[in-house]
Length: 212
Image (cartoon, rainbow, N blue to C red; front, side, top):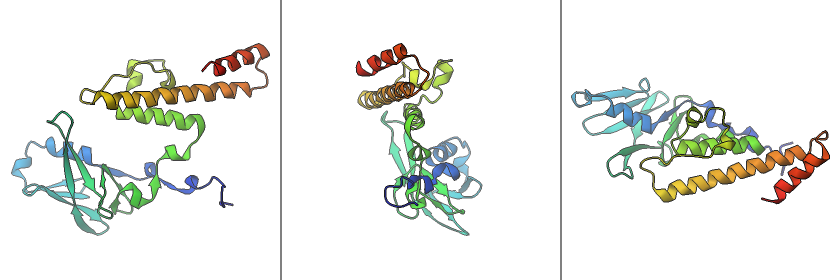
C-alpha cells in the first residue's frame, strides 16, 4: 500500500487550496489605494500579518509569535508604466506571488510542501482545470458572462489582454486549443465504452476520432 507505482503519491500531498494565503498583487493594490499612505509611518495588512514601513518601503511578516523581514520586489509591467509586486519567501528566498499561512508562519508553496488540486486529478476533470487556469492567465476568468450556455470546452473566442505580448497570447491560445481537443477525444472514447450506444453511432464516433 503506497509502494512503488501505486499512484498514491499526489493524493497524500497537501493542497494549497486548503490554506489561506496572502497575494502580493493584492497587497500592492492595497497600498496604491491608500490615499493617506504618504502621511503614515506604518501600515498593517491582513490583520497584522504584514507590517509595512512606508518611509523605507520595507516590510515584515508574521512567523509564529514573531516577525521576520519580508523582501519585496517591484517588477515593471510590459507596458512600461504598471508595476507588479512580489514577495520573497522568508524561508527559501524564492520570489513568489503567494505566501501561505501554515500555523501563522507565512511560507511559499514549495516550503509548505503543497501542490494544486489539479495535480491530484486525472482525465477530463484535470483538463477542465487546466483550461480554467489558462483563462485566468489570459485575464478572462469571467468568460461565462460573455458566453451564456457555453461550456469551457466549447469556447471559441478568447480576447487578448491589453498589455500581453502577442507571442505569449498565442502560446496560451495554442495550449488551450490543444486541451480542448484532448477533452473532445476523451469524451468520445468514453462514449465508445457505453454498451447501449447503437453500432451505427459508435461507427461515426470511430470515424470522428480517426479523422483528427
